[in-house]
Image (cartoon, rainbow, N blue to C red; front, side, top):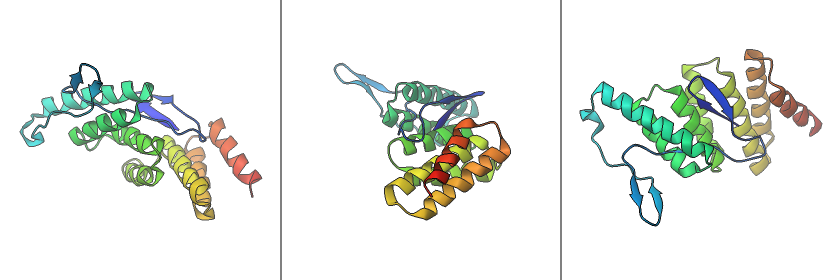
Length: 179
């Protein structure tokens, strides 16, 4: 599965591994013996200026990436949710949020977010890559051939957009072997 860092992509895990992102924000509370609490202070978002929203977005996104790299997925998810609240148009924050859901074992919720991203950016090869991975995880959970077919279609779309993706070619070859 892929996660995005603004301007570049980092690979966090493979198809068979459940792992992804992180969440947090600048006003997190620290406990003496418990570490970081992922509960951001309550703020009325309608009172924030655009500059304040951008600053909160940047901090939440940065925090999410930090937690994702540490594989602290619940914290990462919280941070990416905060980032998405501050900038609902950020496909990067939404992409990483979806990857977090997939990593914690909720590929169905991830699929909904990936499909929303594809409505905004229909030629997003990485999104089709992760969408296919989410479909395949559902296939392995439920053994429904429909999920496998949807995974194959998503991966084929990803390859059509960006042909040089050896991992996806491997995934498709494995799907063909399982038939």
